[in-house]
Image (cartoon, rainbow, N blue to C red; front, side, top):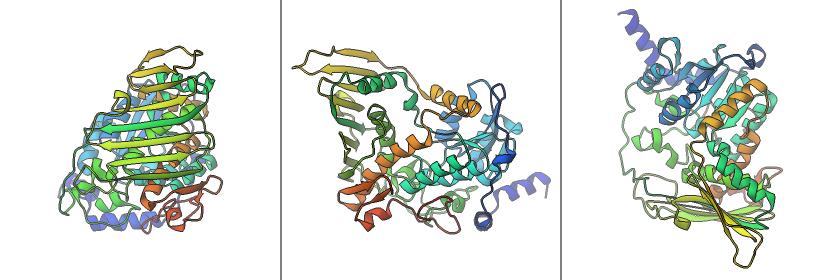
Length: 442
């Protein structure tokens, strides 16, 4: 056997060996290496590791980092050997380290910060472990699959003094920032209703597929990680993980987090009092679990927030397939990626109608903000406290939908009031031997 073939076999392993390795490694104490990791100075290059080499991480987020000065990709990680090899070449070739297990990447002292672009059910564990290892983190939205995981991530960042940014790039979009400032300025008058919607005709049915063996080179047990043990099914893999409760929260936490983020940019950090929801699978006949049609209504102390999504349609509210609307006593702002406009109330004369064009792709600015904060140690625009707040609102809509009733929220204890079944969905039960440090419900 050649050295190359020996190395290849050792890297790929077998599903059984991969599972045993994951079990043994997960049983080890989580390391606390912050003291051994140097923070890049103002003029230092930031060395990045990418964890999760799918389309989002490798084709959208990583290139946004690579285009900025003072950044070098030094490591990539994925449980899919074929995909890992391809993305390693995009990241820089042989000078970039390739890891099968994210814990090995976090042990790499050359890595200053990591991009977490895995399935959502991995976000919390990897982010907490990265903070413990002294790495700063750019983690894709939503923060995780549950509210409790988000709180654990906030606690890890606080304890280990890490810079962590949630990758909802609209927080750095200039025309959305301007619209939110207009709302907060009071010029719209009293804003009592906020709406967000996403009508998406590009989401096809995923159909019905039988269980089968994982693709060659994929460590499926490691892909599952803390999620429940299930037979491999191609409909639950890669992009489609979004539509299964084990790994994500459907359109509510995929598009909903983005737009709830926008809505709350104008309304602040006020926590909701309650949420109720309605919906179901009314369009798609397939294996997906999450609703293709959903409306969630949130009662905040000073306003009502409404979210709705629909698959298979493009004709959304106000002639827009997706958008956000703040309705005030003086006028209404409606926005999406193409820009925003003010529609004045016909009985008022204190506000002029306005139109503002869109400001282009906000991801470069969002990524730049994270990198600036890695160097300055300031908090980014979408830090974990804000990201957790936004994600919590989205999760509450799903909890109301799944429980089939109105849920009342205690924001201090982060619990559903007087409803054990719904409150159970605030936390998550990890598959052994995985466990989440700093979880309130571990």
